[in-house]
View (cartoon, helix red, strand yellow):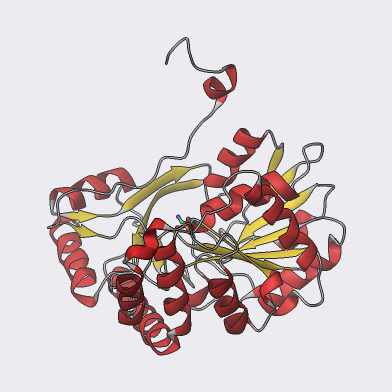
Amino acid sequence: MSRFWSARVHTLTPYVPGEQPKRRDLVKLNTNECPYGPSPLALAAIRDATDDSLRLYPDPTSTRLREALARHHRVTPDQVFVGNGSDEVLAHIFQGLLQQDAPLLFPDITYSFYPVYCGLYGIGYETVALDEDLRVRIEDYRRPCGAIILANPNAPTGIALELEQIERLLEEHPDQPVVIDEAYVDFGGQSAVTLIARHPNLLVVQTLSKSRALAGLRVGSAIGAVALIEALVRVKDSFNSYPLDRLAEAGATAAIDDEDWFEETRARIMQSRDRLSDGLRRQGFEVLPSSANFLFARHPHQSGAGLHASLRARGVLVRHFTVSRIVDYLRISIGTDAECEALLTALAGIL
Ligand code: PMP
């Protein structure tokens, strides 16, 4: 703290990112990254873009990448917005599309950046409890609000909503923006992008950090009606007209175009997830049904904090959660099969 801080900075409660340890020998299953390297075509495109052209500013409209995303999602490029990770895209959404005089609704619990942005941009919010199975209940969102944001699949539970449930929500709130954060949708969820043509209030947010293995490049997107995208462009151009650098745009474009790598990698992760889920259940864990690249699990006789610490002592990093009604849960990112095996072996030594 310092007397030079503005009064507003004193009021902020920043997001605390997961640990990124310097040690390379840890089995790192704590921040939902992809355990495999990115598409070789993406790496080659980044290398090719590493030349004298870096002295020039990048394309402020990231047109090549937006065109690639538009092809992938079967929309038009003017329905696509890109930014530095979906966190930045979300920041622009919170600033450009959410009202300050009616509350934003989101579940308790969900991605913990949402309340942080509400604090930063002065947006009021109300949380809606998950049901007893830790699922989002669409009926509970039938109340006056300014907007709704749902992560689908939800984080950190990994549980996905059906598309019909999202469509029902959109129909019940035709006058409010509904934001669906699909950071984890490529691991078994159904994308709401197909609903965009019918619902001008829908904005879908995606990222290249998980299913494209490019968390380090920081690229995310929003897809929706042109009028919503225009609001985000206005915010971007009032903040940083060049959010994506030349290397990020080149790598991300090649990554989106590499459908073979994408299909193979996400299938591999889903297979490892199902195997790890079986292994954890055999060790007595209750494991929620996951459509994401992580599992949310608790052991009926062990504290989450205790398991987290014992695993860390054995070189395995996971996250543990005790918030609201969520007590003693571990969130375990899906690693390679060898990493998942290392986790199960470490647990066998602890339990
Ligand atoms: N949404 C959700 C639900 C997430 O879990 C994350 C990653 N922690 C993000 C958005 C942000 O991802 P990124 O900024 O890497 O695109």
